[in-house]
Image (tube, rainbow, N blue to C red; front, top):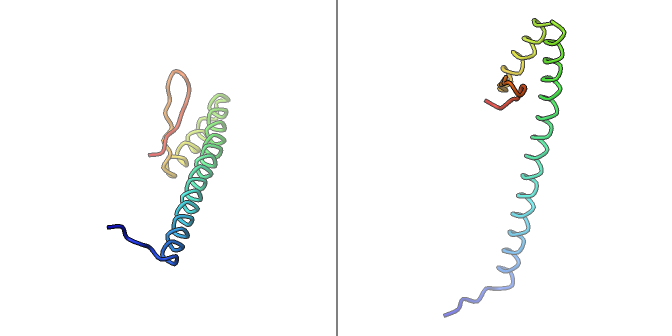
Length: 87
């Protein structure tokens, strides 16, 4: 036996689907925006730290490293260069 849905119920489900898709898209764009912002900000701090270390300003370079660590970002030093990850 097939259930018959009223026009009101169909309209409700249509609106619910539109809201679900809209909020999913909003969440997706927010996450991407945050990730690109984080990449830019950490990249600037990382470049500043590496530049200071190259010019023998180790105390300030260590201070930037500590600030990033306090924000939950770990710097990883390797032969290929320095990278970072969120703790």
